[in-house]
Image 1 (spheres, helix red, strand yellow):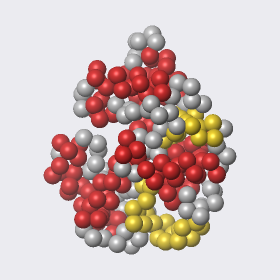
Image 2 (cartoon, helix red, strand yellow; image 1 turned 90 degrees about the vertical axis):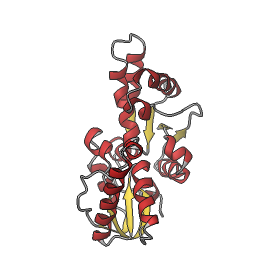
Image 3 (cartoon, helix red, strand yellow; image 1 turned 180 degrees about the horizontal axis):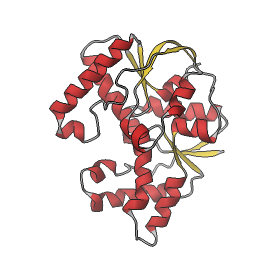
Length: 238
């Protein structure tokens, strides 16, 4: 099965190890990985800030970059959901709406792809520790991927899972929200770190780089002994 990796900006610029983990896990599961070097930002920051017309140029480049892909897989539910928005953005355009729909139909979040397409729940991972899982807003509320990450984590040997209190609450990142509403965002992430601490977990796992950078930054500044990992990194542990 040929899989084309949609790395996302944050993984490309800040969390390269997450991208490598995605590739290694999928290759171990029998996938052939392709990476279009002409992929750029999906346009979400501009689009969510109201610059719809300007964001269309980035969207068109992404549609073209992945046009020949069989499956598109990304380690970010937020960015995958942006691809799902493309058909609405180009609604009424005789050329781009159809192309946007084709891209949306073949794009999957990383854990969703493993569980729902590859039909695998045990990837052979092993990691000793107590972990809790942060559910990102876009991935759960909009994309609707809720169970796949937990199904995979339950099969990781040596990992004890503890549910995160207030798991349905935003961490305060929200893309440009954390910049525009910095004070509010800061209070939200402080509350999230407190909830993580309450679990007694020594590992915080998530599936969106933005959330993990936000929460991990506050954990680091407060000097908390909690390791932050993307679920792809967890599933790549042997």
